[in-house]
Length: 146
Image (cartoon, rainbow, N blue to C red; front, side, top):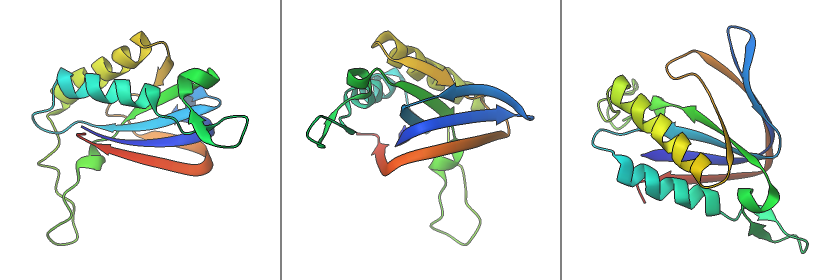
């Protein structure tokens, strides 16, 4: 799995002009599922992002997690994170998991994060989503099967 985690002041996700999900202060997490990924990878990454200390404490140090600040997570499925751009100019996506299995693991990841005490809102798997994001910092962390 590959995650791109961004600290946000707010994020809104729309499909066909309709607001599907919206969060205030928290994390926007783009989730890419690779061929061969399973629940073990999803569990490990869910635990990591919930504990990720990227919010400032009273001393201005990045020392607080999304849980500590009572923030939310907007999880967005994004197979393009698995793009292979090593040959030519057109990305290849053979490293991305089949849509059915990718959706299962994306949903599993969201449930796991929620089970750890964080409110999780989602995008629409496979939809053409419009995302309006107000980054905070910016702070961007990439997890790639750690």
